[in-house]
Image 1 (cartoon, rainbow, N blue to C red):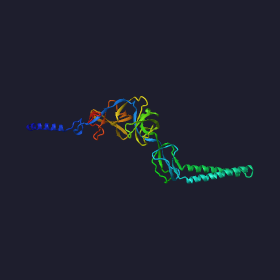
Image 2 (cartoon, rainbow, N blue to C red):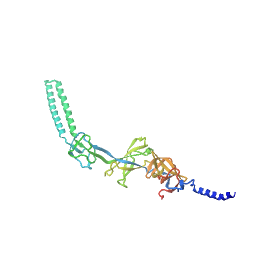
Image 3 (tube, one colour):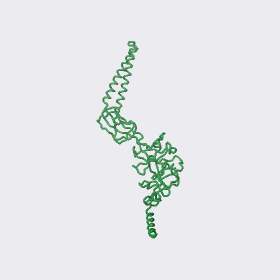
Image 4 (cartoon, rainbow, N blue to C red):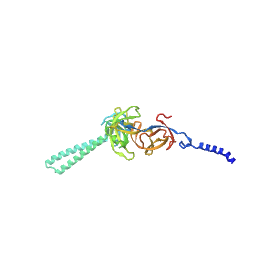
Length: 352
């Protein structure tokens, strides 16, 4: 009994030590402090300002000039990078043989015409039969066709601009022999220029032909270009659930060029009502889906969402969230972030 009395204080001390070594059931593993994250509250906001999209610029008209016949380049009628008019001659190939063929065909045609004229006189005098005159008339038709064919071949020795536009860098020089279909130079029409882009199918009711928009490119920071929707694809892409559109933008100074990345802001077609909006930096990608981390009782919760329209800096959430939810806008991409992680929140823009 006396020995048990001496062991009691020791047992109590061990119990206190074990209790101190166990982590707090409500805290992060290993006794780590909560992760500091920035958050924002999900709110209903007006969408009357329109929505954003991204796309790329393309030429209204574009063609690579290629010869239909082989030949040697005799003349080049343009300066690289210059503006050319519709119908303006760009290249001339050596046409000596083609010109000779035209002259030969024209001489045969002239002779056939004289034979026909004489045959008609002889038929009138009943000196030859009508069948002999018909043969001469048929030969006249053949020679007329040969003249037309020779002239068409001669015309192909001159390559002209099919439309007015900006000429590119030529890949051949005078005296060089070119083959059928060989690339010679690119011609593009830059005014107006077009922009191709896509928007989610949920925006279909907000789209219309002629809808006004503004466009920005990285080459001209702070400068906006005005335009309008030119066409809307009648088919929704089954994979991305998006709709392709084409916009037309005036480009009189040729500042915009095909291939540039563009950010577009489309004006609303009317009262777009209210929607749940979250900062775009809150969205995370998971395969083809999107998700956010919300904060519930001091812990992170992974929440799958379905998005809709875009406005500057924000995205509409049509499924997965409700007004008043708190989403993490900074810190959710850290490797240690996971479902159930303890977090300490601070308003967006005030995090350390």
